[in-house]
Image (cartoon, rainbow, N blue to C red; front, top):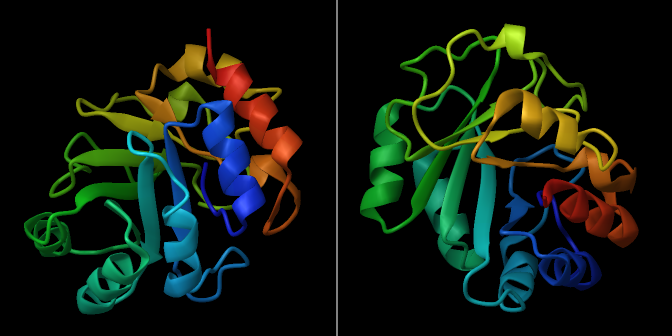
Length: 192
């Protein structure tokens, strides 16, 4: 459950059974949150639920500073970050996720990161892609993203067989504003 910015939506995600909650620190995003505000939300998250900081094209020193200030356990990098950014994050004690579009994924596309997030060709667009767009399946744990909603996530999980899924716009009432009812419906749809 990504792009959370309020206590109400963090609580809804946790109570619904989300395995992870994400906070966006990428400048220019409608889901942007300040590190101090994210830290207050991270404090609400029980042990066992992963907390993720999402970054895009930012200097690694800034990423590490913001992740520490927010208190997240995982760093997710969207962009063309070099492998050494993932190594530095891991050395600093963070788990790592590399986000990449299906169009750019190759079997070696996970270099440096512990996990992958594979998104639509235009990440953040709210559009899906088909299994044909991913002819070589990942060989590491990976998350499916891109256009997922409560009404389509079960079918897409069946079609792709990912380790997990990531949603943001698919549980929003409007861009950047999460809907607790959609959050609950989404999590319920991912469970057998």
